[in-house]
Length: 316
Image 1 (cartoon, rainbow, N blue to C red):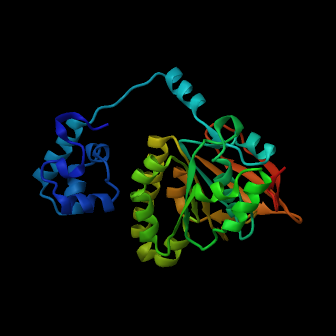
Image 2 (cartoon, one colour):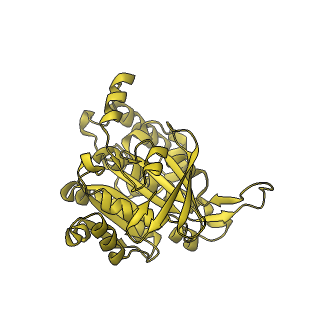
Image 3 (spheres, rainbow, N blue to C red):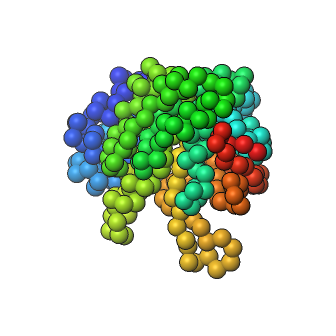
């Protein structure tokens, strides 16, 4: 946490003006802590700064950065106090260790009609419930990148849960993003909205759709992954700062290198894979059933849950 010597923003560092600060942010160096751990040679090369100026900026960032050490028991107490959002299906809640976790990014990937968006709708309603009823007592910020948001579906789920449908809709703040820049901007400017509106869930449906369509070809891959990295780090920062949950859906592709088993692979590469705290693979089964596989979690074993997507929402 940067506190000392009045250095709070990148622009406060010696040799870093607004233009250089913007360059650094675009390259993923968006905090004082990241500058403190950077190589002066790398910063100089990337931004065009003189090497001496880059060294001064890094040294100042190191002096301005303090680290807070906690015992494992303190971390444990903090984790136990974090809320979880129930999914509507007990089997899926158990698979996740009690529901979708706050202070974390949960990713659901799968093919079309696998239930990813429906889970997002269900969580958007359930998060509004008080903590003792499986919610977080807050609102949802829903970033819609594919035109999938349906208010009538929210009303259906809320009515089935015996909640006021008008309030349920009022408590979901929707942004329709049609470009990746709009998607990024919505999250970059979310701090005030999250704080003032008591947002406890951010949904992005889907994370990669716009990035995938705008950055085509191997030549655009580095730029895409750089912007994606910044975007996801901002999501995690919001989750940590405001104790909220982040739920992202992701598209898939077939990996021809996989000769045996399911070749379905989520898009986004290692950046998305490493950033997501929990990863769920959803696939369609018979009729209204969906199989949800827990692929990655820091504290829960791999496993599967079978859920149903009904007119009333997600059920066992």
